[in-house]
Length: 635
Image (tube, rainbow, N blue to C red):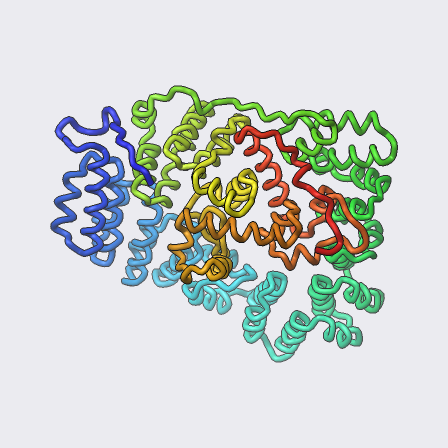
């Protein structure tokens, strides 16, 4: 990360001779000294950083290391002194854990701030039990108990007290068992069942088997007694089976539905689940199943899947009817206004179709670009140039201590801390100031924060902020080497990481192009490179090399069809192969609209639209539709 020297007026004392860059280096040296437990050197360096905005983070690091030796008065002073810093929340959490380790329950309750962290909340329950502060305690424990997920071990003493002292303990156990099965936590449900009598345990075991092997269990349950629990188990088994095989679930449901006194809610739930699963599985019966649902139980998902089935079948009159029956918040979305226009066109109502396309074509979005292509109009991608506004950075940051600290933490590569400060700062800014903040983040090459920040303003047309083009040399080099469109690479990168080179997803994808380690290693092997570590995958050069190589692979796999390749990059080639049309060629916009995974559907639309915006920055006028070849049945 390149460093620049920025003096901040009024925040650096005249006595301090060092430049801001020298202060940053002192910060790094002090951090290294603390890491090596050289406390005397750390304290000397910290003293030299008295006026440096990010210096309190060193004190936080030191507090975290010595928390086991801290006295309550010291912790209280520390937390009071830095109450306005985002790290104060985490420091308090560390101190609470230490107090619990010590068994200092009086001070635990004194410092506990009522936070929703379940582990710490349950430790507060323990403290109240130890100190005999029992008023209202069972009600609070019940709110944690009645979740369908396993809870931290720190909750066990409170749960034991609740079950021992509550008059509704058995009812509470059954409530949690039902929630656990619904949350797909059968082992938790089975564990909870052991707290009940033998007959109840047998019922839970039946439910467990129904969860694991729903089809087999449903055949057995058809002969079971008609009681509350068996009805609940059957409905659960139907739900489980439908998610795997909707038509088998339908068959089983038809066998049992009239032999048990299911509630109307249970009937509605089962019918809707079967119909939705049939739609997701692209079963021919799905349209009839969804159409037969009572309008009162048609949720958003049911409306949307029925519309997508009409699309897949090119049933344009049915499509118009379905869109017009949607609730207003769906009907007015660009997506369905576009497809309504297509339906009107197919039915010969050209004037109405053109009117809708006219309204959409002025939008710089996926559906706006589709509409503009249909009308053969230029895209509305007009640069607002908010980023060119003149900002006195020193004055702006002087008035925004959170943002000043965010900048320093960013340059110190403490990105999590930097983001916490940054987004805390935004709470205190008006719209114009937020726009200025986004401009500064972009100037510092902190693109992901700039993009997220400008999204909080009305300045959606500031494409230099929303669609920057960093790492241009590497992107162009690998685009040429892989015969890839650089706008497409940028479109993928923008969607994947917002240009954050250190991005890590919840499933483990890494870097600018969000590569799974297994994919990166496979690519590296094919390129004759050594097996990369995660740190290697995060390196910008490697990430772009591996990502573009994999993008080229999926482009080859699907005959350079960008829509299919983007879907494969997101969901894997195997899924895309399963989603291909069965009988005849399908237009790409139809195919994208009927992709079963919402995440992948949105991903493909975003990559296509973003690539179109990047084309403009590259001085090209590529039609989005040129990247959307018809989808064949076989690749």
